[in-house]
Image (cartoon, rainbow, N blue to C red; front, side):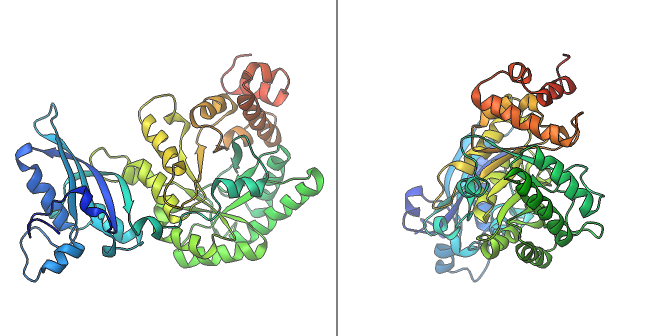
Length: 423
């Protein structure tokens, strides 16, 4: 029970036995004198009220639906106004498992009650922890499907990104598959286009996969990009299943978490789902607004049912700006979270054999290393590019220096001279 009708503060202990999503924020630009009033107004405005007192608000509405401040700590800064570390408990019945409504409550709604607040994380309390079932396959399921344990998986996103018909892509698929990669996906820029539709592409690429199995004994798992309007994504997912496909990709930030969750609920048992973070910079890159990347790209897609998430650029490694965010994304993919399975973190963007060892040292075994240009752009061709990536992973896991491994493998040796070594 709240201590006062119009003062939404409470102790964290009062949440025990209830069902909440507890949001943690970093609030900018508040003085110590105004902090309590401003954050209190925020909690009211993001739940049952607005900027001015309203008639018709009952005690039952307050106790059942008003958000509660359960943590408010002022942090003095060198600037004129300081920072506030804020935790707000939102009653689960206000939005259930609808991500759009949850985010409306957590970071949207009435601008007049808004703070300069960046959403850092959420905690699921009570029934909220069981409401989100997470991925159907996760790390173990994908490893089981491709038959690989004990090392990072290697993925190629086919390049060029778009502009070619299915038969051209199928030949690219075949050439890359000869190099031994574990996974192949469409680029995020290619979905269901008039010149290269989902159904035609799946059939052509799976025919190439069959050819590879007959010739080599194995073939990569193919993720087809089905990003579209929600109804069309469902149709595409069903078409992939009927064509014999086992995996799909969705640009989840721009299609929405609810669209991803619906796909996972309806097709997740039959299809492995790869969630791509295209567009995340629009939401997650500001300092004092928006949603922190470890939540946007880590916990949220896992809650929505993704089995793997493309979410990290290698430029974020090496202790540069954003380094901790990248590590927290990986933590959000792997740390225990209710009954939700851990998911693969996909590391892509500028990956070559030269930075594989660093990625492996920083992020460990349960990652997917994604290379595009380093495969198709290899001076000896796509098959050699795929082999060089596999050789680099083998060297990293074995603790062998690249130069030593390159003495044995011409594909790797040529990659080193092409992308960073003079000899």
